[in-house]
Image (cartoon, rainbow, N blue to C red; front, side, top):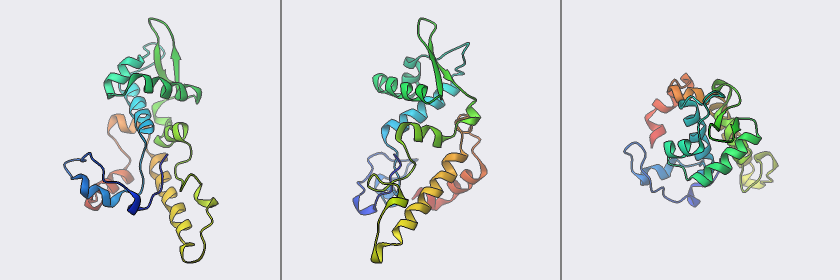
Amino acid sequence: MIVAILKATMPVISVAHRGRSAQREEHNLLVRLNARVDYALRAVVELVAAGGTAARPVTAERLASGQAIPPKFLESILLQLRRAGIVHSQRGPDGGYWLAKPADEISLADVIRIIDGPLANVRGQRPEDLGYQGAAAALQEVWIALRASEREILELVTVADVVTGKLPKRVRTLAADPRAWV
């Protein structure tokens, strides 16, 4: 789940991003994706890049090796994606996986919701269901705005955009701001 969390509770990330230190990344972490969501997004993108179609399904092994995803973990993710109608599958020697609909119709938000539920929550609750009182009452609006911001980006970007590297202008503009990287 993408989870709104307070900075004070966030551990330092151990992996650097684009040459930036993990310590610097800690300051900008209000959302996170769990491994299951990360793997699902990478698997779907890999499926698109591998040209998976009904005529040429892509095996789970190929998807797993292409993105360094643990194969057993990937199998359960692919099952969720199949049940939700994102991918189709076929068993047998010529079997594998392919997209159930065009890549430009599958947003990142679609995959995240399938794997992990709502885009944002606080302590397992939807922001509109929180009962903040007194001086903290405005936090509810902050979490709702955060969810709206996440939704704006994650619903805008499709897996086709990721594969082609042609991200929407809004995403490129936000990513180009140096403050986004610290």
